[in-house]
Length: 130
Ligand code: MN
Image 1: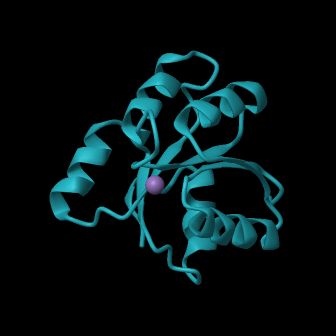
Image 2: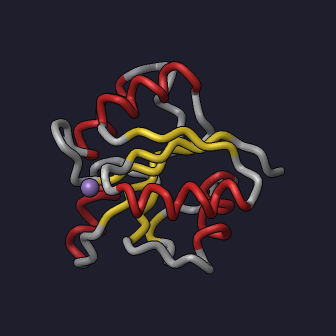
């Protein structure tokens, strides 16, 4: 079922727009934040079905934000997928070890992105999807 609410936390306007445009084109509703602090606030307020979290953000980073979201009972169950330019093997282990539900490498693969999102929404997107 389409129409789920997806929160994108990304400080790069171009990356944010690309992800948002694809998701909206596919029928999802989106929320956007340019900072981890803003994303945490929106997540608590709207309880989205999925959160895409950039790692490098001004102020609080994405890993710290993940910890906050998982420590808060109302948002703990929301899957959080790291959205990151880091593409080294060790980074993958690091992000999954930190508790992210998945990992997407930037720039996102425009063709594969909708199916990757679908898998995470359906709970089957464990690990790296690219
Ligand atoms: Mn960033």
